[in-house]
Amino acid sequence: SFVGGSPYVDRQGHGTFVAGLIAAAIGNAEGIAGMAPSAELLVAKVVQPDLSIDVVAEAKAIRWAVDQEARVINISLGGLRDPRNPDRDTFSPLEAAAVAYAHKRGAVVVAAVGNGDAAPRQPWSYASYPAALPHVLGVSALARDGSAPPFSNRDKIYNDISAPGQGILSTLPRALTAPFKDCPEQGYSSCGPDDYRTAVGTSFAAPQVSAAAAVLLAAAPGLRPEQVTALLTRTAVDVNAATGCQQCPLQRDELTGWGRLDVTAALRALGGQIPSPDRYEPNDDAGAEAVRLCCQTKRIVATLDFWDDQNDVYAIKLRRRQPVYVSVRGPAGTDTNLILWKPGTTRVDDLRSLDRIATQSAHPGPGERLSYRAKTTGWHFVQVKLGSRGAGRYKLVIVKA
Image 1 (cartoon, rainbow, N blue to C red):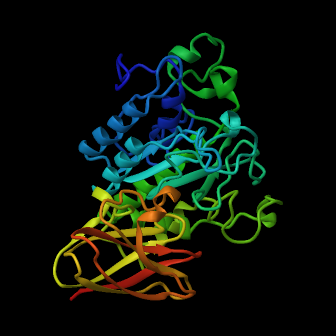
Image 2 (cartoon, rainbow, N blue to C red; image 1 turned 180 degrees about the horizontal axis):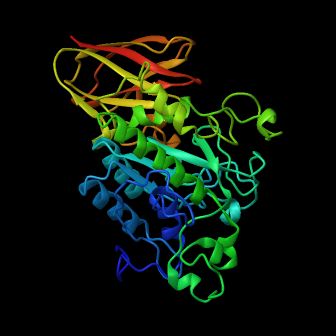
């Protein structure tokens, strides 16, 4: 527990409900069957008795789980994201660093995109944090009729996949079901408080995707997180009017991401062409997150994904007046851009950092090249940015004269 007390006592029920969806016992003719019943669960409590969540505790919990060799981390919580109002936005560098730590060490991070009950309005147009971070698989909810319920946050980029999130049955601590002593299904939400008897929320959609990730890793333990994400999202069933969502257009959309989770299709995809891993990840920002490169000439083959990994950043050491030549060939049909940042840059996604751009090449199409003569000695940062919808491999060449 990262908030005091025993990690084995759940007085709220939320964590036990989530855990049951992943790993409830099978073959006992009671309640539900977990989607990954053989999964080993690690408990990391981060919610205070007053239901508040300290991001410091959350970040510590993520790192602890990774250090315990967790392969999948389910995060059924979230903080408000509002890119139009920085005062309301809850982005946390601590949380982002913990997620990057998890991804680097091979853990798949799955998070609920959030419910709009804490947002200024419903439906809210932005996924919550940490779902709205690179390398996090953001999960939205589907109603029983196949529609996208108003409580489920929308997002054009960070809503990756959807799963049922209305009328869900799962496990509950017996202390919460005992007051309903005449109810025969003790230990299950059908005998719990009203909020759990008719449970709704993206919190309960996310663990279904986490369980699916665990099933994939059990079948293919060598998969990298970005490969698991690609397999789950690219095999999802498109949600549209024909499946019950009148608001949803064909193909990927802000309401349901790539579509409804299909575990069977994801498992079948293991027998086909598996997406390439990217050994340089995570390298989504300047500063300490950038991958440091040596040598006069460096050739890199890596991947970008508009919805999960728009930026790759590499650090190169240049002497004053030293020329450098950079070229990139991005995924076919995309708009791939090159940006070179001055020494001392720490963020490439912050509008306040734009004066730190040394030079850039941002023409339409997948190919770019630039040249620059360093004005000062230091670590400069090469950013490869995917500026349009798409995903795939790119080739980067850096030559220092």
